[in-house]
Length: 275
Image (cartoon, rainbow, N blue to C red; front, side, top):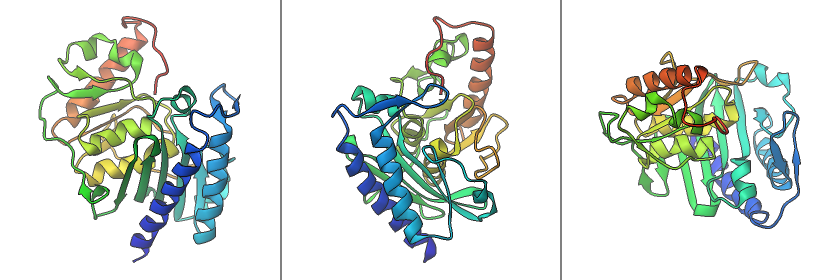
C-alpha cells in the first residue's frame, strides 16, 4: 500500500510540476549560471520549490536530494529519500526544445522503488513502481527485443557518436537527446534500443528512468554490469548503458570503446556536451 501511495504522490506531483514548468517554457524565463557554468532558470527553481514543499509535506520522514537544492548530508541517514530533477534538460528548455522532463523517484535503501517522469511539452507521463511494471497511461512499456547492434537505434553523447567504435557498429544513430533522463527512458518505451551516458551523471538524472527501464524489462548498468546504487555520499556515477539483456553486453563494450577513442582524439569533430 505504501508503494502504491508513493507512486500516486509522485504521479500527481510530476503532473503539477510539469504544468508549472510550462508557464515558463518559450516565455523568456530568467537565466543565470550555477557554479561550474551550467545554466539554471527561474523555472528550475520554481519547480524545485514546489516539489520540495509538496513532497516533504506528504512524507516528512523521507530524505531529499535534488539538483537545485543544496545537498544535506542528513539524507544519508534516511532509508527512503526523494530524488528529484525539477527540469532535466535545462539547455533544451531554454532553447525551446520539447525534450526536457520533470524526473521524480523514491529511492529506498539505494534503489528506486517508485518513479514518475513527465515530458509536459509532449504530453507524455511515464510511471513505474517496483515489481508492477512501467507505464504510460494505461499502456504498459516494454523494451525492444532486438538482439544485434547492427541496425539498432542508438542514442548517446555527441562526441561518442563520432568515434570509430560507434561508426563500426552499423547502428542507426538517432538525434541527440538533450535530457539524459528522457534518453534513457526512451529505451523503456521502445523508441530506441540502446542509450549511452558518459561519466558524471547524478542520481537526479537517473533514478526515475532507471526504474522505468528495469520495469520495462531492460537494464541500466555501469560498465562493469552492476546496477546503480543511489543515495551514496557522492551522488554521481560512471559511464553507463541502458538496453535489453541481449544488447547490454555489446552496449557496454561500445561505451568502453567510445571512451578509449575519445581519449585518443579519434572523433570526427570535437566532442560536444558529453552526457
